[in-house]
Image (cartoon, rainbow, N blue to C red; front, side):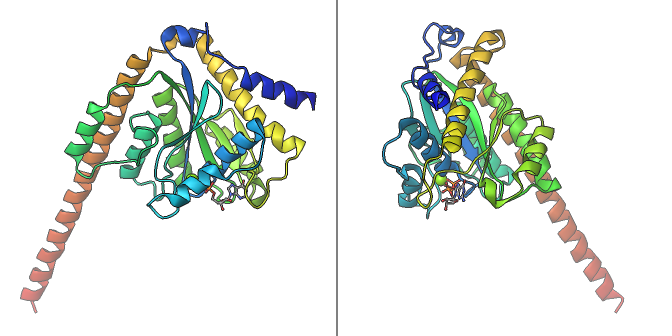
Length: 297
Ligand SMILES: Nc1nc2c(ncn2[C@@H]2O[C@H](COP(=O)(O)OP(=O)(O)OP(=O)(O)O)[C@@H](O)[C@H]2O)c(=O)[nH]1
Ligand SMILES: [Mg+2]
């Protein structure tokens, strides 16, 4: 039990003051919670708050999603203050994770979408490019990605490649290897999943059973898991602080992120154009073959 007291104290009293990161200009840590829709992002945020701050269990994050206009899913990048230094961000979840939607996720992860507003990702390529380049660096946030994945889902070979690419990009965008949270641990084979994420190069992987409205009875182990996640997140910030030579100021990192998202968007647009051309060519070819065939009838 002493463990729990120490862990809680460590997180509550954590400060960036006089740290290398503060010298670079950072004054807040955003835990950027991301992942596919329905995997348990909002519930994870509720769980961290409940474990650290105590009090009555509140389904704040999921409730917020239910009252938003997009029918139940979290459609805003909603922020929740945890301590003076740590803010939790419930990013909008992705569904089919096509290229277009992935770009949108990167704009959230890279802090290129405002907090507490609906996530807007414009339709035309030109509009999207304009929107990204117009974003000003308006915060001194360290971005720490936390990837939520439900043990209920398992991981196919096809999705493995996509997840690998996403996690690599998340690391490049933020400068931090994502922390992996395997939710709904009793509803699937979390051990296999844990090994699969390890094989993808991930280091911090935590199987959890979130506190939910249905089940929020506290147990020491559950409490320890959520507090340890926060504690390890802070250790990661300290570690990167000590290797801060490879870290830029908030403005420098912002410019890098904009450039990276622009590159990804441009590559996707080229792929989409190629696909359109291929489809057009296939259709024309099909038509030609049909008329040829008809002439010989
Ligand atoms: N058993 C179990 N259920 C969970 C767990 N985490 C979330 N759930 C349930 O799964 C459902 C979806 O959880 P949410 O937290 O709303 O998922 P989300 O990722 O925020 O979803 P979107 O906002 O739609 O992207 C809810 O019914 C939760 O109660 C968990 O660890 N264990
Ligand atoms: Mg949600």
